[in-house]
Length: 415
Image 1 (cartoon, rainbow, N blue to C red):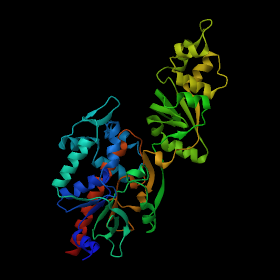
Image 2: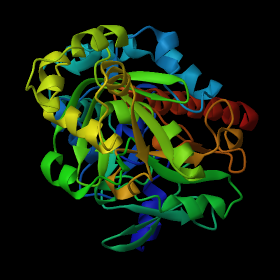
Image 3: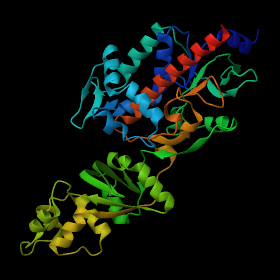
Image 4: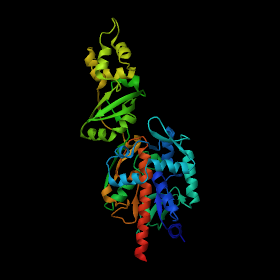
């Protein structure tokens, strides 16, 4: 008997392909329902991107009310909203508690595990999956389907055909390719006529044509307590200057709008360097400078601007206005031209993916019955702040529920 034949005989029942949060969540739901689940991943171990996310403390979700929470997702699809409503942030926190990994809400409303890292949570999760009988097969790269309809893998031992049905694909987007998400699944699905929105960088920095002096002096410098505005949308947060652009949480919150604007040419962003101070108050503070006070010291003392803030003003206006009213107006709305997003290899997450019109309410591919999709493979995006992981967990669990319902229907049909 060949390895392929042996695998085909042994590997029956539901399979999950992809060992990120969406895939692991789906495997747990299926196994808890009593199914013998096999989970495949192309990397030597599962959860690698999850562990990378934990380097910043593992922001699992956010504590804001659900209507505001759901508004963070683009496009606002009913399917994803329903999945998150079925497994909301409170349920994710309860799940962590049940694994012995309690969470807390930070000052920004973000939710973190008390351990403030991913590895203890992942270890506890994998122990649970092992106890449920989930079989994990690593170094299995999904390459498509066999003539019999089962998944095909490329492994260190050669080509392997399996006989699983149903199958959940949770292969990620195309960011962090060194961790396993490289978008290689796109042509495999498109070959079956499945509509896939182009994969684009999300939660990514954008290039800016800084002057050499500004770039050399301020690359790596944070911009704290600012507000950004684009097309009438205003967000508060922080950003970081890079040698060739700008990145950070406030930028990511507007990333889908900025990206769309750069696709039409460029994005005209406005930065409010003092969002907590009214323009008229700033103007009063900037009037009647002391004799001999330089403009930079005037901005530093009267307007409480940092050197990088003053540098941004100089990048925007040559020369800087002297009148207090004009200076105050500039501080409240520093214009910034963003030229293009950085590439997928520098993005935190991916926009685009399998269009929701090609999956049913249970996250099954309409053109390939018995095959389900979850996580970042689907056409949605969200900013950092816990929304990405929440979407992955919720969609994985929702797709597993769809698989269970499908298996029940198939069993009833065959009875």
